[in-house]
Amino acid sequence: MTTIKIIKPHKYLYLVDRTSSLCTEAPCEEAFLVTIVKIELQWEANKENWDKIGTNHRIDDGVCVRDNGLTQAWAVRIASLQALQDFVAKYGKCVIDRYNVFNKIEIYDVYRE
Figure 1 (spheres, rainbow, N blue to C red):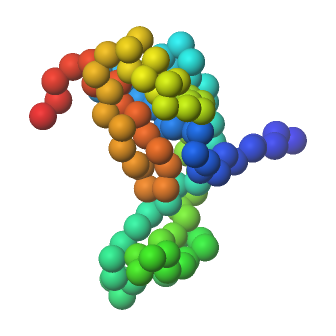
Figure 2 (cartoon, rainbow, N blue to C red; figure 1 turned 60 degrees about the vertical axis):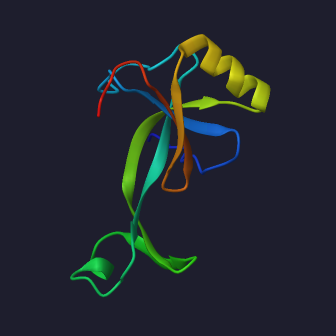
Figure 3 (tube, helix red, strand yellow; figure 1 turned 90 degrees about the vertical axis):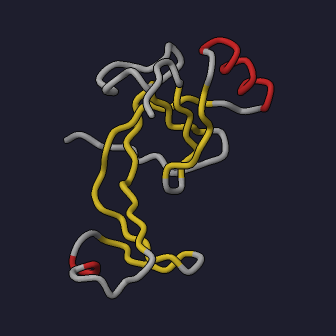
């Protein structure tokens, strides 16, 4: 029997991807695979079937939230501003953002707009 360790968001964990990649390979040498809960947000819960899909339906800060299965993602551990600056210096332009409740870094290595 395989046990899956589900990673919860925390301040040192950043999901990471590369603009030029389809995420089938590690986006950087520091990346490791994590299993995360897919979280979906919706501004109004009265939409058709919202409560019929997923689990753990709740209201967080006025937003309807549900968990909808598990997925794997690449992540890195960055524990300080200096470590973040070192990461950007190593990989070049990066976009720091949020992916639902997770911190996220996109290594912006090709134009995508």
